Image (cartoon, rainbow over all chains, first blue to last red):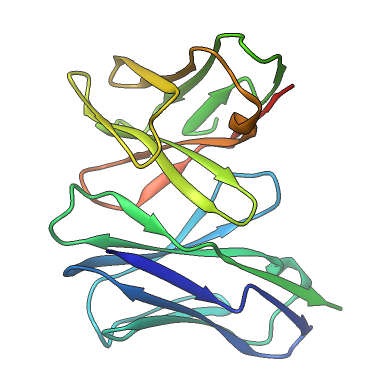
Amino acid sequence: EDQVTQSPEALRLQEGESSSLNCSYTVSGLRGLFWYRQDPGKGPEFLFTLYSAGEEKEKERLKATLTKKESFLHITAPKPEDSATYLCAVQAGGSQGNLIFGKGTKLSVKP
Amino acid sequence: DADVTQTPRNRITKTGKRIMLECSQTKGHDRMYWYRQDPGLGLRLIYYSFDVKDINKGEISDGYSVSRQAQAKFSLSLESAIPNQTALYFCATSEWRNEQFFGPGTRLTVL
């Protein structure tokens, strides 16, 4: 069964304190791994897609990396405005393109 | 203007009532999706549609029905609402199997 597990469930950081969020997955032939940011009461906002092990993508203070079993979202020198829930989703190669989502990591960055 | 819009944004209803949630998109995407989000359970797929004539059940379709009135419009109905259908509902769109773009969500409360 295809599965996505995100850890930790919640993470509290001080402003400027870098850290990483983990997304572990089991899927029948990964086609793509997606990262989203979700603010309270709002729809998820697309951040990155990663397709193959070794691939990296960056956007401002965020960098996503991918291995054959997991993905990391590295946050460098976070600011309070980076506080949100970060969702990871996988897309199986044999699927019709549907995404399987993890439960998310809630990030809080204190000034 | 937002690319994916949902109406209503908030709705309170009573058990047994019929409810329709509507989604419109201006992205020109063929694929549209309905998800629900519950605390601790993450995003779960209810129905998805690849075009006007192609509608498919997702992980949790029981108690729901959908209608794809046009390429840009996809509605979700609860024929007889029950309290455990209280949740945040999101519509999403995608081009083929690429990343999905989400609407702002509808907060539904069933009393």
